[in-house]
View (spheres, rainbow, N blue to C red):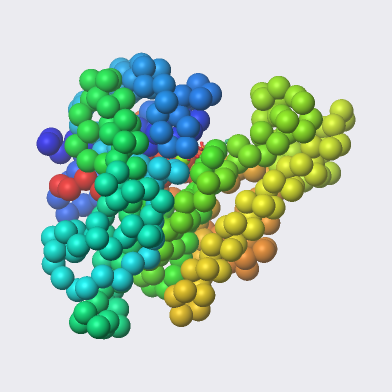
Length: 347
Ligand SMILES: Nc1ncnc2c1ncn2[C@@H]1O[C@H](COP(=O)(O)OP(=O)(O)OP(=O)(O)O)[C@@H](O)[C@H]1O
Ligand SMILES: [Mg+2]
């Protein structure tokens, strides 16, 4: 593997790719950033369903971005992956891996034989009748979905050197590195990732199968308007009922209702974390994803959780070329995952 790598985040609405050079003992150096919109239906729930379309787009991104390597770290997140809390005997990583398939079936939605499973130790846990124990995160992905996405990327002539878990990439790029407990909430189109970290290390992850697209779809079905019009309504109005377009007062209520449901899921997830982790208080929250651009959403979330919001700053953790110096707030919302994937490369 060369020291250059491209972190590739394939979301529901867009592919984002960051070429970076890993530097020993220093922050990675970003060489190029490319983003390309995906046609509706090309990716669903984290799985590439139109591999030819995705491969064509990836090829074009490599040309447009003048990427200097075909080595890729691919992110997996979305509904094809789950993360669970797990206590295992305090054995070597290899021994734990061997034991996992025998222990985790009741925790995951897919048959163990059809899953890729891994365990990330976090801290020592109280001893069990098996002896010393370690608490950690179990991550399980549908093996077929991973293979399918890897194959689509290969079709573009690229080489997947690693597959990484999107919430871990988010933590690297935008998560708090300080003391205490902090959260990242990434509101995507169909998925909302929640990562809670203690002292800069992921402690808890939930992938909520809901996102900003739910509001768009509710507008399409309830108002019987085309998708692009629904999208425009949502973006223009957000959670501000006072900005009601002249021809459609109903939209405000629809957006509010759907977004409230999403907020309730986020709030319940953070509460669940606290109640299962010694009532730990989440002290700060980084809100990312384009879904976080919904007008009024950041303020509503800050108010209902009582948690201070911190703006994501993924570019502060890397070296940026001058050509990307103009990157601002909106790029910071959506580039985090791809940057974090590239940051995960081992120098
Ligand atoms: N200005 C805006 N205001 C409100 N919502 C917006 C705005 N811009 C984009 N969105 C919404 O953000 C969502 C897309 O977010 P994002 O690009 O982070 O998702 P994704 O990474 O493609 O998907 P996922 O992470 O779910 O796979 C869409 O539902 C879109 O309608
Ligand atoms: Mg995303």
